[in-house]
Structures are given as structure tokens and as C-alpha cells.
Image (cartoon, rainbow, N blue to C red):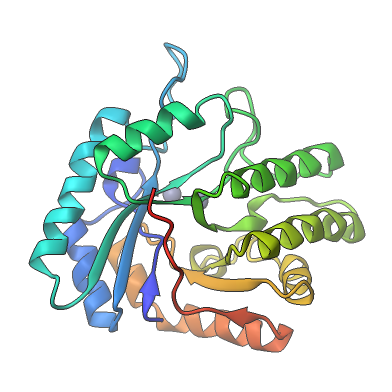
Length: 256
Ligand SMILES: [Zn+2]
Ligand SMILES: [Zn+2]
């Protein structure tokens, strides 16, 4: 693994370690590129609604500048990028995007943790056999892809559909085709793999391989040591090889 574009910081309230500790771990691993993609702030939530797993909008300039300072200091050893992992929430997308641009954030990865605009929704990782929600998840991720602003899709298989596998694959085939036509890589999430979560889901990756999608490994690091976990990356490479899935080492970042 020479690049990882999915690194968190304590600003999301559920990660540990300083930015510099992540940078040093990436250098130790021999990475050439480290992208930070902490959980995006979201502008425009109604008063009184608190989305606690993401940084607040006013923390964003400090986040980007911390990474840009490290970029200067470590430029001879590694390339660093300030990005965010962001949901595509239609109600808040434009306003949030404009704030991110003004704050110095350079790229987005699409991590759709909730459908619609989050409020009142259940986390997409909760098991469900509701096909309508699965359809909505896929539709919303495809709409996000079609903004042309996301560099890749993080854990596309986070939606935890427990119904008929044929129904699962039908909807995700549509998503995979769209990713292929948008030229967007799909992330094999190493946090999920290492913790034996419901993702990466082999049913998803079988379809992704059949549709000729590109995969990229993402550490989804919530602690610096996650960047040193070679064994889990090896498991991901083995899975990809078995499925005939192409894994790309680097992703051309879409600078916002
Ligand atoms: Zn997280
Ligand atoms: Zn995520």
C-alpha cells in the first residue's frame, strides 16, 4: 500500500492520535501519499440537531491548516492532502461544499452513513431487509457520484441489507455500473475487514469484479497504528485476487 486516502483525526470525537502521529506511521509503512478524510462537518442542520460523529464547521479551517503545515514539514518524505469523508445530503451539500472550499479542504470521498439528510434516519450499518431503503441508499450514492466532486466511494457496502442476496446484488450492480461509468474507484474498507464487520461484503465485491470496477484499499484509520496493519491489507489483496478484482494503488484526487 503506497497510498491511503482515508484517515481520521480526533475532531470526529471517535478517533485518537495527532495528525503528526498518523503522518509518521504512514512514513514508517513506506507510504508515498497520505490523505486525511475526517468526517465532514455539515452546514445547515437545524438548530438543536447535533450530529456527533463529525467535526463542527468552525473546526474545519484549523483541520486543513494542521495538515497543510505538516505538508510543508514532511514534503520530502510524503505527500499529504486535507480531505473529508462526506455523505451526499442533498439539503446541505452546496452550503457545506462552499464552506469546505473556503476552509482549505482539497478533496472529498463519499461515505454515505445515512440516507436522505440524516435527521431521523437509522445508521446504514444497521441490519435491514427493507428493499426500498436499499434502493434509496444506492440512488443517493449514485447521485453523489454524479456530482463529479467525489474522488472515490468509501465502504460502498456499508448498507447492511439482510434480505435476498439476489435483490442485494441487483441494486448494487446498478451502483457498480454507475461507478464504472463515472470512473470512480470503490473502497475496500480495511477497518471493516479487520474488525470483521458486515463490510467488506463478498456479495458486493463479486458484483464489482463482474462489472469491471476498480477497487482501492482504505485504512479508515481512527488510530495511527491502523496505518501499520499490513496483515489486513494482505487479506484485502487476497480477496481481490480471488475475485479477479482490479486494485489501484493510487487515485487521481479531484481537487474541489
Ligand atoms: Zn469514523
Ligand atoms: Zn465511514
